[in-house]
Image 1: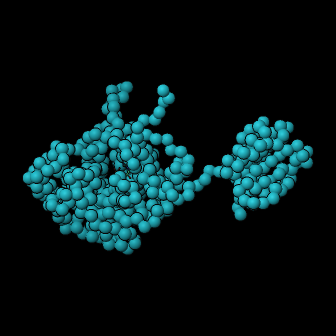
Image 2: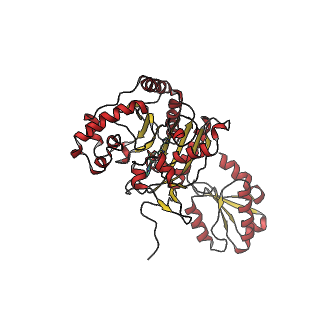
Image 3: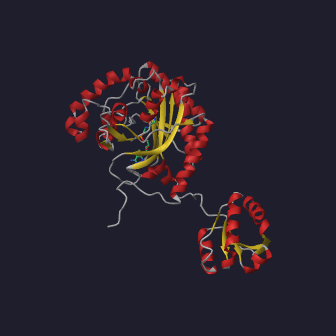
Length: 416
Ligand code: HAM
């Protein structure tokens, strides 16, 4: 039997791969505008990192991690998200002392053994941003504004942000008790996993796909302490100043344990049930709880696979070469090869099939390649030191040009 890829793991083919590249390029441009620098963090980390940061009671850690014991007997895991690795690096590399501004971005694949479905893969790409060391609502507004501008730059205008505040540890202490009492009172109505973890993490029930919707109407609501309420109000005000559409959604709790205060998601109904394009929030206590300095932080991660799905009807950059070089006679092969080399050296994309094949076959390949021009060298051209330039995409006469002038001509045509 032929070998095949694993379920939930996929090959990205053109033009989808070009869509991913374009999103990444848009992201890098936007990150540069906001002073973010790239961090490249490992794909494999100690499992404990995710247990301690993402959270023991989260779906990700409980059931979705690709975790195993390596040859050295270490418990390791393929990263299911980027935030824990960034925080580990921040602490391990002493980045708080590096004189940097604490703004980092990463682009990379994440791994979660979820049940595959439309928009949900076991290996997927995230573009993530983390701003460590700034507690002010200006940082919240900047981070969310940057996210929306990035999505716009990638080609999807008009998105709106779902926003909530989960308060600080203090606000949540009293709330946790009230919610726990409520959930215990209606435990028989909860789904199995929620029932199993209400003591450990009652808030997760609000985020559950099954119980979340009915609990949103009936469960007790979180009351923010004055500081958290002010932070949230100011964040919203600043988002209005930045012109960012947002909707306060008290049901938004997010499925990871480290969040405090502001949490947000960008969703799109066009994606079906896996509708979150991006999720993020503040994590003011995480760096300290992982052994680092007291460093409040905020960040988000964008699902590139999902954004690419939303952009699938937009034209992707076509990878067609500008020119396709054809040798119409065997003896012209070497000249054609020299021309191909010169074109590429001049920064013009060029391709060929095989100079030993028939003219007809080479011209068929030229058409298929999507090239704008075929550059043909036959016996006559070889003798005269010329080349035939034949437009393939637009109507136009074939021209005979001295071979020394072809690159200049194509450069002018490429610019026009
Ligand atoms: P998350 O909400 O778990 O947050 O993931 C962020 C985004 O990754 C989701 O909105 C979705 O677009 C994409 N995503 C997640 N799982 C899958 C999947 N199985 N297949 C395809 N796409 C997926 C985080 O990961 C946090 N680290 C975000 C963050 C950064 N919070 C603070 N800083």
